[in-house]
Each structure stands twice: as structure tokens, then as C-alpha cells.
Image 1: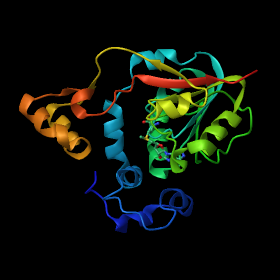
Image 2 (image 1 turned 45 degrees about the horizontal axis):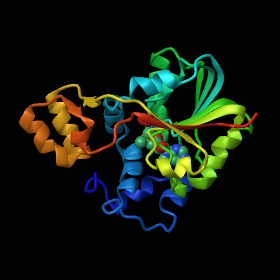
Image 3 (image 1 turned 90 degrees about the vertical axis):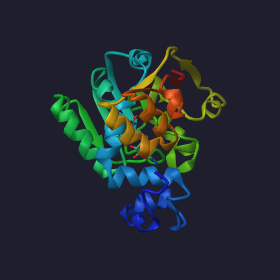
Length: 248
Ligand SMILES: C[S@@+](CC[C@H](N)C(=O)[O-])C[C@H]1O[C@@H](n2cnc3c(N)ncnc32)[C@H](O)[C@@H]1O
């Protein structure tokens, strides 16, 4: 990922995106992997979707989601790893996603699954959600929120809580900074068990590992693996969530 894009690619950002991801206008995706991921979403969205499809959430996380909810808002929906599950849980779901190419893929998947009428896909950012106060029973983000202002931060968490109704729940799934969230009153849930990424084939495992987990690619090739334990890939498995029920 670090060698995939250069500063010449930064022109793909809209003005609103650039103001968040390259506020000084001089980022370098070769030294800033977080920036490289933002470029991936816009330049190679189908490649990102191939990865997201195989990095599946722990079933415990999916089963934890409340059923029969009236309104759900998801922020940073991407190509719908969580959205496709939320479509089964809420009568009305709004999926907020800033990257246009990801919104297009998500709309396509929702239509194919027959969920297009129940899930609205809209443009927006954590720190400026285009939704009214007290809108949703559940406000959720999966592998998208971080304490950094460009990916949420204090302003983003305050926005998620603003959009959640009193007595509703704000949930951060697959969080990367648990202590930051628990310091803000969030409770942690973790689901046990061994977790692996199940690629479509050994060839795909090698191809995607070379791009996204280069340190693991040799071991995957040596073992002929198609199914690769998360520990081998060097990332924490999607088994955790942090949530807060707002006061009624
Ligand atoms: C790793 S992807 C996760 C996507 C999806 N939730 C999933 O689990 O597959 C991170 C997502 O956060 C979105 N994102 C990045 N910055 C954001 C921001 N400031 N506000 C809202 N979403 C943001 C990206 O466009 C991307 O879709």
C-alpha cells in the first residue's frame, strides 16, 4: 500500500475531502498509510471491496446488533460490510459514506440484495452528519471511526451522539483505539474464538496479501493457504465493539 500511490494522486480528492485528509495540501501517501487508504477508496474501489468481502466480522458482532429497530444510521459505510447486515435489522437505514466510488458499489450491492428501498446511501462526514438530531435508534460505524479529527475524533463522536435519540445506542465496531472510547463512557464487548480471513483461492490470498499484508505474503505462499489466521496477517480480528446507550 505504501508504494501504490504518490502525491500526484491527491488530486482525486474533492475540496471537502482534501480539507480533511490533506489539510495543508502536501500529504505523501508513501509515508502516510492512512492517506494511502483514502486514495484506495477513490482510485481502486473494487480492489478495496475484494478485501472487505473476505475480512468478515465475527458472527457474535453481527448477532449483537439489535433487531427490529426503526431507524439506523451508519457512518463510513464503505462498500457495505456492515450495511448489508444492518439492512436486516432496521426498517429505515441511512448509510453515510464520503467516497463516491464506494457509494456506487454499495448502492449496486443493496439493489442486488433487494434492500435498495430500505437503505438510503448518502454523502457525509463524521464531523458534519447530514442528519437531524435524535434521528436514529442506533448510530454505528465499522472500521471507520478513529480518534483523529479527519476520521471522527471528538467532533465526530459528538455528531454520532447528536444523531442518536435519547435511550438509543451509539456503537463503534472493530475499534482501533478502545481506551479512547472507554474514557468517554463506552463499554467494550469482545467475542472469542479463532478468526481467519477466507480468500476465494490461494492465488487471491497471495495477490491481496502482497498488497495489503506484505509481511505475511511469503508464509501464505509457503503454506499454500486460502484461509489465513488474522494473527498471521498482523491485524487484530474484527471481534470487538464499543457501545454507549444514551441517557433517556
Ligand atoms: C476501512 S473502511 C470501512 C468501510 C466499512 N464500514 C466496512 O467495514 O467495510 C473506512 C471507511 O470510512 C470512510 N471514512 C473515512 N473518513 C471518513 C470521515 N471523515 N467521515 C465518514 N467516513 C469516513 C471511508 O470512506 C471508508 O469507507
